[in-house]
Length: 288
Image (cartoon, rainbow, N blue to C red; front, side, top):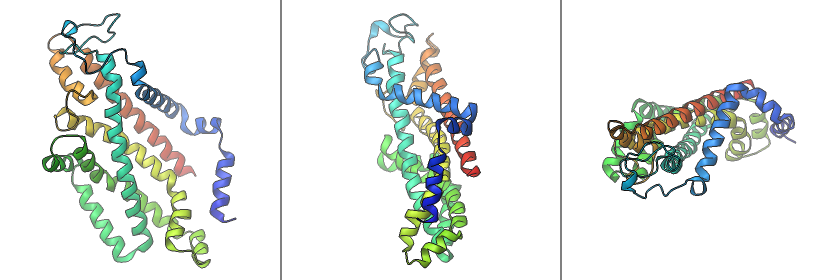
């Protein structure tokens, strides 16, 4: 059994729910619980939502809170609570896709640079520096200009922008792991560079990758919501929290503030919970 396998087995053997709770602490557990509730509502939106989120009802236009509509109706009479439930799908699925793409590409670049070193590492590092210097919203605007308004272009643009956030941290950790004795032992045994990276290097980088990706997810939620607020991301009549903040501002001036308040509060709570959870996971990874 290799040293890495022994280490992984020991980690799994020491795992328990109570240990995980102690590692995350009260803030981490509260953040994880909030995220779990939001994800549950997101997945069960077709069952939990009392109304069709896109069905107008002019008799309910800008209606206040009532038993039938706890959060009232928007300018078109659509149930705000139902739109918040359905809006979680578009609001969260886009950032998750952004982080998945940027994590895969960033991790591949980071491990390649750390393993190859020399000119390869220098080229990758300069590329990451260039990407890091450009604001994410600029990449999103460029892709929107090329592909037109919509989620696809924004996701691709932000995925490129978030790649260096993951790659720079993973590269530093990979350089450290590259010089560990278990890597040299695997190399002496005749294993290929690809096998060593996949079977040994990446498992030891997993805590750092997960922590960095979770932290970046919170900022991706903000960026995508902001772009939707500008009208360049998710398009009406699709329910989305960023769009609901925009349309809700108009409704607020006409006496119905619940749409903007509800969507804005959910964005803040989800982003805060994701960042707190990412921070706790990062500390746990450092302790290991």
